[in-house]
Image (cartoon, rainbow, N blue to C red):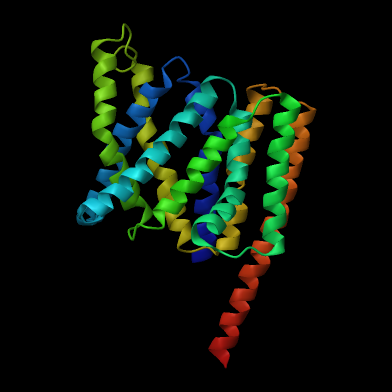
Length: 303
């Protein structure tokens, strides 16, 4: 893969693979309260991202991202949404609901399409309306079949979708914006860790060296895939990115069913089948749209 696009696809595959097998990492921390794991993830992510920006000479961009109260409010909204997403995902691993978490990340592209219509008034083609309708039907059917609403899937897809909506209002790159987000959350994270270290009978950090090393690694686990994704996004077509990123929930699903032995019954099979069909329709439509846009650009350039 010597071309820029080839290196971008490789970076995207590596990023999605890391995200997809992340449940294996969080399972090692299942004995630590999710809020404590999240607090450590926030602190170590701040340090990792700050070091990256320092090496790149871009710390000034971080100050610009937090330049006034309006920007701070937008960044804080994004921070609360992504931290909620992280917390629910970590919790889903600890309580044995990774299958449902993977469903949430499968749903995300379709939720994003629906939010584009509701928030930005984007017009949906029939090829986009059908997948959204199929997704709604799949969730309703799964709720009816299991007798319980798949809240983890809905919260994960909803918070990630709204996170994307908020991020559209930020005019800085993904690494800088995420650094700003975790920086704003850092005081809350420090307060949580302070409580655990003074009040909890057995704080995770400091007692066991393996746990401490794993918690410190959460910063790299959070930051490295995002940097790879950012690298890929500048070099790979949108349709390709959309297709490759399905690797993330697919690996999560396989980890849940094949390694964690989570239950997967008939209702799960029907719901996932409908979601996969919806994503196939959506992906083909997006690919055709992307190809048509490129053809139009070529025609304009040669006319």
